[in-house]
Image 1 (cartoon, helix red, strand yellow):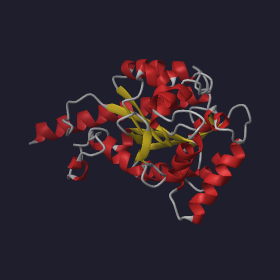
Image 2 (cartoon, helix red, strand yellow):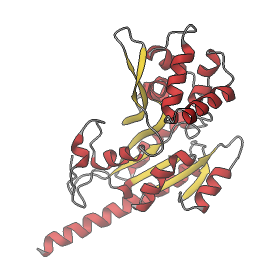
Image 3 (cartoon, helix red, strand yellow):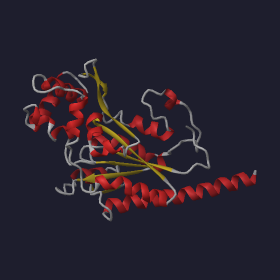
Image 4 (cartoon, helix red, strand yellow):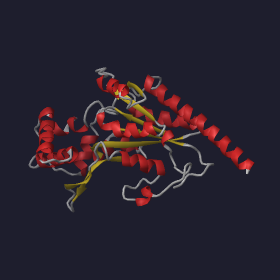
Length: 287
């Protein structure tokens, strides 16, 4: 989907999920407790398994979820959607998407929202956000289900490094995870959403490759911290290491710092788009 100069600008806001839109890991908000585990013990076993067998940590936690569910409850898509429906969100998250979309429209820009997460797609789809369909795409780990609907194998396992592939898909508008068009060459100006029109919002080290890629290409990376605990250690480290351009509390309510920051970035992108159109028209006239 190569871009034409006359197309209306599109801004992609890409979010991590755990501790970015929600205060805790999604699995720790009901699922881990339902299989009889203490949250800390669950993650300790996951990390030990990953280390012992040289596994990807995300594959390790997915296996542990399946294995520990045996004899306790049916581990299928429906149960994961149900656990997702119980996930707590940060203040203002439910109202955020409509408000930012409306502001973008006011500025002559289409806003698209994307999840890029190592968490579970099924649980994200089960949230009120997933039910409302606020995301253009949810790129997250997910399961393959057998003929009885039971989860039997990972369909996708997304870790901190392979998260970056989805930014290239968003850039080119090649959103299907199996579409090889993402490897095709696009000339400057043909990308549907150039990196300069991307905002990446995340909270921790697992977001650093995406943040770094967005930064390197003129985009905007925002680190967020829990507004209840006010623990800024991670965002301080990321900004000192030049991983992020901005940091603020994960408070998505109107008029709060994150709201004003993202609107200011949208303003900048809108003005840049106007200047780019004028430049293009001048070039055409000069031919």
